[in-house]
Amino acid sequence: MWQPKKILIPTDFSQNANEAMLYAHLFARIYNTQCTLFHVISLFDYDPNNPNYNFPSFDDVYNTHEQIASEEIDKLHVKDENILFEKKIVRGVSAADEIINFAGENGYDLIIMGTHGRSGLSHFFIGSVTEKVIRHQPCPVMAVRYQRENAIPERFEKILVPVDFSNYSRKTLEYAVELATNSDAFIELIHVIEEQIHPAYYVAGDVSILKMFPDLREKSTTALRELAENNLKQDIKFSCHVKEGKSHTEIVDFADEQDIDLIVMATHGLSGFEHFLMGSTTEKVLRKSSTPILAIKIK
Image (cartoon, helix red, strand yellow):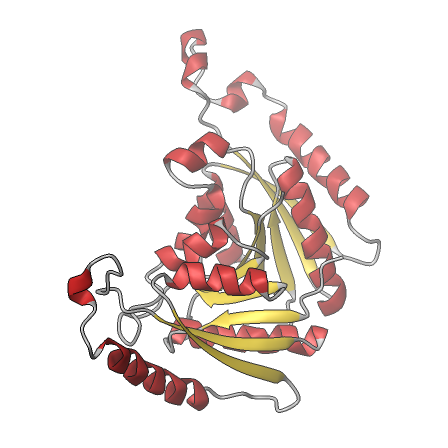
Protein backbone atom coordinates (compact mmCIF):
# COMPACT_ATOMS: atom_id res chain seq x y z
CA MET A 1 0.00 0.00 0.00
CA TRP A 2 1.37 3.40 -1.04
CA GLN A 3 1.94 5.83 1.81
CA PRO A 4 4.08 8.92 1.15
CA LYS A 5 6.47 8.99 4.09
CA LYS A 6 9.23 10.88 2.25
CA ILE A 7 8.33 13.85 0.06
CA LEU A 8 10.65 15.82 -2.21
CA ILE A 9 9.66 19.42 -2.97
CA PRO A 10 11.79 20.95 -5.75
CA THR A 11 11.76 24.73 -5.54
CA ASP A 12 12.91 27.68 -7.60
CA PHE A 13 11.24 30.07 -5.10
CA SER A 14 8.45 30.94 -7.54
CA GLN A 15 4.80 31.12 -6.49
CA ASN A 16 4.11 27.74 -8.10
CA ALA A 17 6.93 26.15 -6.15
CA ASN A 18 5.77 27.77 -2.91
CA GLU A 19 2.29 26.39 -3.58
CA ALA A 20 3.83 22.93 -3.82
CA MET A 21 5.35 23.36 -0.37
CA LEU A 22 1.93 24.18 1.08
CA TYR A 23 0.54 20.95 -0.35
CA ALA A 24 3.44 19.13 1.26
CA HIS A 25 2.09 20.41 4.58
CA LEU A 26 -1.23 18.78 3.77
CA PHE A 27 0.41 15.39 3.15
CA ALA A 28 2.63 15.77 6.19
CA ARG A 29 -0.37 16.29 8.47
CA ILE A 30 -1.98 13.10 7.13
CA TYR A 31 1.06 10.81 6.95
CA ASN A 32 3.58 12.29 9.41
CA THR A 33 5.88 12.81 6.45
CA GLN A 34 9.53 13.77 6.19
CA CYS A 35 9.86 16.58 3.62
CA THR A 36 12.90 17.84 1.71
CA LEU A 37 13.08 21.24 0.03
CA PHE A 38 15.28 20.72 -3.01
CA HIS A 39 16.94 23.36 -5.17
CA VAL A 40 19.08 22.81 -8.27
CA ILE A 41 21.69 25.37 -9.27
CA SER A 42 22.02 25.00 -13.02
CA LEU A 43 24.01 27.40 -15.18
CA PHE A 44 22.60 26.57 -18.58
CA ASP A 45 25.19 28.60 -20.47
CA TYR A 46 27.84 26.19 -19.28
CA ASP A 47 28.90 23.47 -21.72
CA PRO A 48 31.21 20.93 -20.04
CA ASN A 49 32.46 19.81 -23.49
CA ASN A 50 33.59 23.28 -24.49
CA PRO A 51 36.92 24.25 -22.84
CA ASN A 52 36.23 27.93 -23.55
CA TYR A 53 33.56 27.85 -20.84
CA ASN A 54 35.94 26.60 -18.14
CA PHE A 55 36.90 30.11 -17.07
CA PRO A 56 38.75 30.49 -13.75
CA SER A 57 35.84 32.14 -11.94
CA PHE A 58 33.32 29.43 -12.77
CA ASP A 59 33.35 28.06 -9.20
CA ASP A 60 32.89 31.58 -7.91
CA VAL A 61 29.75 31.93 -10.00
CA TYR A 62 28.41 28.66 -8.64
CA ASN A 63 29.28 29.64 -5.07
CA THR A 64 27.49 32.96 -5.45
CA HIS A 65 24.36 31.25 -6.74
CA GLU A 66 24.59 28.70 -3.95
CA GLN A 67 24.76 31.42 -1.32
CA ILE A 68 21.75 33.21 -2.81
CA ALA A 69 19.82 29.94 -3.01
CA SER A 70 20.67 29.11 0.58
CA GLU A 71 19.37 32.48 1.75
CA GLU A 72 16.18 32.07 -0.28
CA ILE A 73 15.48 28.56 0.96
CA ASP A 74 15.94 29.71 4.56
CA LYS A 75 13.23 32.33 4.01
CA LEU A 76 10.62 29.74 3.09
CA HIS A 77 7.92 29.74 5.70
CA VAL A 78 7.37 26.43 7.48
CA LYS A 79 3.88 26.65 9.00
CA ASP A 80 4.08 23.74 11.41
CA GLU A 81 7.17 23.26 13.55
CA ASN A 82 6.14 19.64 14.12
CA ILE A 83 6.71 18.86 10.44
CA LEU A 84 10.28 17.92 9.59
CA PHE A 85 11.62 19.91 6.63
CA GLU A 86 15.13 19.23 5.40
CA LYS A 87 16.89 21.47 2.89
CA LYS A 88 19.12 20.35 0.03
CA ILE A 89 20.95 22.39 -2.63
CA VAL A 90 22.76 20.64 -5.47
CA ARG A 91 24.62 21.64 -8.63
CA GLY A 92 23.72 20.15 -11.98
CA VAL A 93 23.35 20.73 -15.70
CA SER A 94 19.74 19.46 -15.88
CA ALA A 95 17.25 20.35 -13.16
CA ALA A 96 14.90 17.54 -14.18
CA ASP A 97 17.65 14.90 -14.13
CA GLU A 98 18.84 16.02 -10.70
CA ILE A 99 15.30 15.78 -9.31
CA ILE A 100 14.72 12.34 -10.83
CA ASN A 101 18.07 10.94 -9.69
CA PHE A 102 17.91 12.38 -6.18
CA ALA A 103 14.38 11.12 -5.59
CA GLY A 104 15.19 7.66 -6.93
CA GLU A 105 18.49 7.24 -5.10
CA ASN A 106 17.08 8.38 -1.76
CA GLY A 107 13.84 6.44 -1.73
CA TYR A 108 11.28 9.24 -1.94
CA ASP A 109 7.62 8.25 -2.15
CA LEU A 110 6.27 11.46 -3.67
CA ILE A 111 7.50 14.53 -5.54
CA ILE A 112 5.43 17.71 -5.26
CA MET A 113 6.37 20.47 -7.70
CA GLY A 114 4.96 23.48 -9.52
CA THR A 115 3.80 23.14 -13.11
CA HIS A 116 5.74 26.25 -14.11
CA GLY A 117 8.24 28.55 -12.47
CA ARG A 118 10.27 31.58 -13.22
CA SER A 119 13.35 32.29 -15.25
CA GLY A 120 15.80 33.78 -12.84
CA LEU A 121 18.09 32.42 -10.19
CA SER A 122 18.38 29.00 -11.79
CA HIS A 123 16.23 29.41 -14.89
CA PHE A 124 14.26 26.52 -13.43
CA PHE A 125 10.76 25.10 -14.09
CA ILE A 126 9.76 26.18 -17.57
CA GLY A 127 7.05 23.55 -17.78
CA SER A 128 9.22 21.03 -19.60
CA VAL A 129 11.05 20.27 -16.34
CA THR A 130 7.87 19.09 -14.66
CA GLU A 131 6.81 17.11 -17.72
CA LYS A 132 10.19 15.37 -17.91
CA VAL A 133 10.07 14.47 -14.23
CA ILE A 134 6.58 13.04 -14.69
CA ARG A 135 7.64 10.98 -17.73
CA HIS A 136 10.69 9.51 -15.98
CA GLN A 137 9.40 9.60 -12.41
CA PRO A 138 10.92 7.24 -9.83
CA CYS A 139 7.79 7.79 -7.71
CA PRO A 140 4.40 9.52 -8.07
CA VAL A 141 4.54 13.23 -8.92
CA MET A 142 2.03 15.84 -7.82
CA ALA A 143 2.01 18.93 -10.04
CA VAL A 144 0.40 22.11 -8.71
CA ARG A 145 -0.32 25.48 -10.24
CA TYR A 146 -0.45 28.71 -8.25
CA GLN A 147 -4.03 29.94 -7.90
CA ARG A 148 -4.31 33.31 -6.22
CA GLU A 149 -8.05 33.04 -5.62
CA ASN A 150 -8.04 29.47 -4.26
CA ALA A 151 -6.86 28.56 -0.78
CA ILE A 152 -5.06 25.28 -0.11
CA PRO A 153 -7.62 22.84 1.34
CA GLU A 154 -7.15 21.49 4.85
CA ARG A 155 -7.71 18.03 3.41
CA PHE A 156 -8.65 16.42 0.11
CA GLU A 157 -12.44 16.48 0.05
CA LYS A 158 -13.07 15.54 -3.60
CA ILE A 159 -10.74 13.38 -5.69
CA LEU A 160 -11.27 12.88 -9.43
CA VAL A 161 -10.11 9.66 -11.10
CA PRO A 162 -10.35 9.50 -14.92
CA VAL A 163 -10.91 5.92 -16.09
CA ASP A 164 -10.35 4.46 -19.57
CA PHE A 165 -10.76 0.86 -18.33
CA SER A 166 -7.11 0.05 -18.98
CA ASN A 167 -5.05 -1.64 -16.27
CA TYR A 168 -3.27 1.69 -15.83
CA SER A 169 -6.37 3.55 -14.75
CA ARG A 170 -7.48 0.61 -12.59
CA LYS A 171 -4.17 0.71 -10.72
CA THR A 172 -4.60 4.45 -10.25
CA LEU A 173 -7.69 3.74 -8.19
CA GLU A 174 -5.50 2.13 -5.52
CA TYR A 175 -3.76 5.45 -4.93
CA ALA A 176 -7.04 7.34 -4.87
CA VAL A 177 -8.46 4.87 -2.35
CA GLU A 178 -5.44 5.34 -0.08
CA LEU A 179 -5.82 9.13 -0.13
CA ALA A 180 -9.59 8.99 0.26
CA THR A 181 -9.33 6.64 3.22
CA ASN A 182 -6.92 8.90 5.08
CA SER A 183 -8.63 12.20 4.28
CA ASP A 184 -12.28 11.09 4.22
CA ALA A 185 -12.57 12.18 0.59
CA PHE A 186 -15.35 11.66 -1.94
CA ILE A 187 -14.18 9.98 -5.17
CA GLU A 188 -15.54 11.09 -8.53
CA LEU A 189 -14.97 8.58 -11.35
CA ILE A 190 -15.14 9.89 -14.91
CA HIS A 191 -14.99 8.08 -18.24
CA VAL A 192 -14.89 10.05 -21.48
CA ILE A 193 -16.18 8.59 -24.73
CA GLU A 194 -14.07 9.95 -27.55
CA GLU A 195 -16.63 10.37 -30.32
CA GLN A 196 -14.06 10.65 -33.09
CA ILE A 197 -13.14 7.22 -34.44
CA HIS A 198 -10.13 5.86 -36.29
CA PRO A 199 -10.03 6.91 -40.00
CA ALA A 200 -10.15 3.23 -41.01
CA TYR A 201 -13.86 3.27 -40.18
CA TYR A 202 -14.58 6.25 -42.43
CA VAL A 203 -15.14 3.94 -45.42
CA ALA A 204 -18.22 2.61 -43.63
CA GLY A 205 -19.59 6.13 -43.51
CA ASP A 206 -19.32 6.41 -39.71
CA VAL A 207 -17.47 9.23 -37.99
CA SER A 208 -18.99 8.86 -34.52
CA ILE A 209 -18.46 5.89 -32.25
CA LEU A 210 -21.85 6.56 -30.64
CA LYS A 211 -23.53 6.02 -34.00
CA MET A 212 -21.73 2.72 -34.38
CA PHE A 213 -22.53 1.64 -30.81
CA PRO A 214 -25.70 3.43 -29.62
CA ASP A 215 -25.67 1.69 -26.23
CA LEU A 216 -22.03 2.55 -25.50
CA ARG A 217 -22.89 5.27 -22.98
CA GLU A 218 -25.14 2.92 -20.99
CA LYS A 219 -22.57 0.11 -21.06
CA SER A 220 -19.79 2.50 -20.01
CA THR A 221 -21.84 3.72 -17.06
CA THR A 222 -22.49 0.15 -15.94
CA ALA A 223 -18.82 -0.81 -16.32
CA LEU A 224 -17.70 2.27 -14.39
CA ARG A 225 -20.02 1.50 -11.51
CA GLU A 226 -18.90 -2.14 -11.40
CA LEU A 227 -15.28 -0.99 -11.36
CA ALA A 228 -16.00 1.27 -8.40
CA GLU A 229 -17.93 -1.35 -6.45
CA ASN A 230 -15.18 -3.94 -6.97
CA ASN A 231 -12.24 -1.67 -6.13
CA LEU A 232 -13.42 0.93 -3.62
CA LYS A 233 -13.78 0.28 0.07
CA GLN A 234 -17.34 0.16 1.36
CA ASP A 235 -16.97 3.30 3.47
CA ILE A 236 -15.76 5.43 0.52
CA LYS A 237 -18.46 7.50 -1.10
CA PHE A 238 -18.30 7.87 -4.87
CA SER A 239 -20.19 8.86 -7.99
CA CYS A 240 -19.74 7.86 -11.64
CA HIS A 241 -19.85 10.11 -14.68
CA VAL A 242 -19.69 9.35 -18.40
CA LYS A 243 -18.96 12.27 -20.73
CA GLU A 244 -18.57 12.63 -24.47
CA GLY A 245 -15.85 14.66 -26.18
CA LYS A 246 -12.09 15.07 -25.92
CA SER A 247 -10.80 13.38 -22.79
CA HIS A 248 -8.48 16.11 -21.54
CA THR A 249 -11.05 18.87 -22.12
CA GLU A 250 -13.84 17.01 -20.34
CA ILE A 251 -11.58 16.13 -17.40
CA VAL A 252 -10.38 19.71 -16.93
CA ASP A 253 -13.89 21.17 -17.28
CA PHE A 254 -15.37 18.64 -14.84
CA ALA A 255 -12.65 19.35 -12.27
CA ASP A 256 -13.34 23.08 -12.47
CA GLU A 257 -17.13 22.72 -12.33
CA GLN A 258 -17.08 20.33 -9.37
CA ASP A 259 -14.35 22.08 -7.33
CA ILE A 260 -12.15 18.99 -7.36
CA ASP A 261 -9.19 19.11 -4.96
CA LEU A 262 -7.01 16.55 -6.73
CA ILE A 263 -6.95 14.65 -10.02
CA VAL A 264 -5.29 11.22 -9.89
CA MET A 265 -4.10 9.93 -13.28
CA ALA A 266 -1.78 7.35 -14.78
CA THR A 267 0.95 8.57 -17.10
CA HIS A 268 0.07 5.90 -19.67
CA GLY A 269 -3.25 4.47 -20.80
CA LEU A 270 -4.94 3.48 -24.01
CA SER A 271 -3.41 6.35 -26.01
CA GLY A 272 0.10 4.96 -26.31
CA PHE A 273 0.61 5.94 -29.96
CA GLU A 274 -0.91 9.36 -29.31
CA HIS A 275 1.59 9.78 -26.48
CA PHE A 276 4.36 9.46 -29.07
CA LEU A 277 2.81 12.02 -31.40
CA MET A 278 1.16 14.62 -29.20
CA GLY A 279 1.60 13.71 -25.58
CA SER A 280 -0.66 11.63 -23.36
CA THR A 281 -4.00 12.71 -21.97
CA THR A 282 -2.30 13.20 -18.62
CA GLU A 283 0.18 15.66 -20.10
CA LYS A 284 -2.61 17.60 -21.80
CA VAL A 285 -4.53 17.82 -18.54
CA LEU A 286 -1.32 18.91 -16.82
CA ARG A 287 -0.92 21.81 -19.23
CA LYS A 288 -4.50 23.04 -18.93
CA SER A 289 -5.73 22.16 -15.46
CA SER A 290 -5.76 24.54 -12.52
CA THR A 291 -6.45 21.53 -10.26
CA PRO A 292 -3.43 19.71 -8.76
CA ILE A 293 -2.64 16.43 -10.50
CA LEU A 294 -1.13 13.32 -8.96
CA ALA A 295 0.54 11.55 -11.89
CA ILE A 296 1.42 7.91 -11.35
CA LYS A 297 3.64 5.81 -13.57
CA ILE A 298 2.14 2.34 -13.62
CA LYS A 299 4.63 -0.39 -14.52
